[in-house]
Image (cartoon, rainbow, N blue to C red; front, side, top):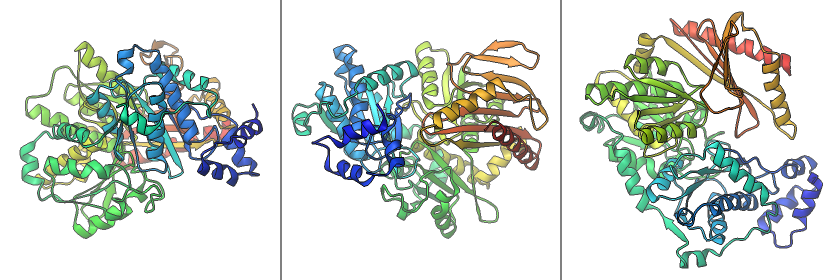
Length: 577
């Protein structure tokens, strides 16, 4: 059907929800808006779906949420009844319509006779992952657009282990979602009847308490925290999101009492009024925390994104200013502390493993190697880290020590199977306490790592491909990288190319080896000076992402190399476009 046909179907619906009918009327006559809303259905992939809120088959609204949940329900209908009756845990963030979407999902599940367990109010994504495991549900649904701007919302699905669905199962669910073509004909059950029949259960403190008890286990050196935690000054901002519900309790439970929440940003507000983007990767997200930190002389500033799965931090420098840390730096200093502390306590297992994504820093690999710990690289997406944890527990062949992605996501203890900013906040505060006791700051700690292992520098950039033709343009760019591959970058020879779409690594001399990872549309180049460059289309946004990692003997040299390769990569992309 054309976008005009799809638009006519929506216009003709006599029982459309009034506010959506109003939104539809507001874009009448705007062909660009109508094309975006009605040309193609929302993409439903391994991470679920995410998009701008509004009417139409291509945007987030009650009807597309019902369609997605109908696909989930049809998948659960294929399983045995005992599994199906374990039900689905559902949580949501602070965005517009998140609460509504969560309950709409429960109503669709209820129409299939599938129980749901819905949080009484907003909760973090990691707590939803925990709830799936704690309640032994068959699946989980998280309504969130993570760190996207206020216009967005999203729908993430989780498997019974609490990790995001692996590709094989999510592909099955996608097929079921697509088969539910009539979004207006999807059956929904009445909420009050579901409650009366115990098919919809409201959860909250009964899950908060056991989650917080597990978070307490993240602390490694209790004596250190007891000694320093009462005096070390922290500033915490949840950036108007779910972290406010549980983050403060987690810090106090760990023994950190001398912290302040940024008051203006401790309000759960779908407008995110104090930040242009509610993303702890961006410097602007820390403007208020920095102002408050300078006023109170804080040692550490921490920010979590709206669904509290990502954590960013800023540390005080000797001149009193604050330096933002990258996701790779935070991960590296967390890892170094975990390994050092566990070794000192005689608790570093011989079969320990750290897991990171292929686009994350090699500094962590060097740190792990110094402690005799193996590093396992996986594809981008925390579900692949969760799969490794499940494998280790099933085969009893490795002990999980830490997992991370460069995009500000970390997991310390596997009672959660997704990145967890609440756990990370508690442990990063402990690391800061460790350095404070030694008369140092986290900034000093990063410099200490670089002095030991060499200066590392990484950067992520992207090219956006919006609009109806965006997917084709992204595919063309990836094809050019394969069919007309560069031979060098900035004059530095390429020593090997990893093509994850074919699972083949090709060295400069033409020899090949197999990549033991699932297939994915990703390319990674290794250069003669140990620099690496990776290219991958985003799974949730119309972007192609470019990752560069390099190292040198000084920070200036590492940064100069980074800039040089970024310029060379940009030149190649421009020549292709």
